[in-house]
Image (cartoon, rainbow, N blue to C red; front, side, top):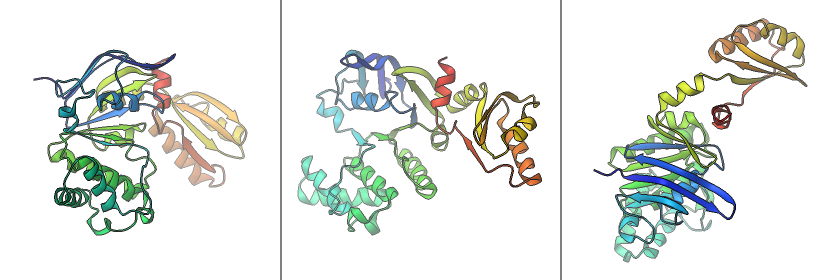
Length: 305
């Protein structure tokens, strides 16, 4: 049986800009994380899968068929873009309903389909409210609702957690798992590994338009654990704090900056425990902590050196 999504030597360029370069990917997991920093080529890959772009070289097949100008394939796919395209004074229901009509549904079918999609994303109580009154999480759910109206077998979600608060992210994790539980194949693009870990164990890493790795999240996490993690510590006593870390075996390097130090550690857990101990000893010494490795950019930088 063919994979649901299969790319062979897939390349796409725009003039002299290479967006994707020679990707070989086969996906058939219920939920797959498409990971990469901004500009990695994730959205280009999705648009090729949707038939919006033609490959410059190689091929991509969805359900065993080329998607470009293929209405039979398109009817089986749903897509939630990263960018909002709303009529702000319309209601969530109206937004989904009129998209249904645009795609050829008759009135009664469009109403039933819009109501069912809004219910599936837990928006029934607010679907008749104006979109400009929605939170970011509600707007994301209405976008997903419009992608669900044709009962797709394959659903693409482009950065669905982007801009959501912790509560909204948690709701989105649960919704994605709910959709996968109904038999849909879901592909979620993100630049944050933690988000993908919450919803799937299958991941594809793209960097600079090139496939860097694909497989289980735990394998990707193993790659990350092999390189020093950067932690920036804000302090007004940079040299004093640096002296506490420079002798530690876990610290691979340390830089003193203006009002901060940058520690690269092979053992983040040990380093965070040490920071907690220092903060208990002297609460004013540490003014803030930031980890630049919350997204995947640092991982890709390390793996492609």
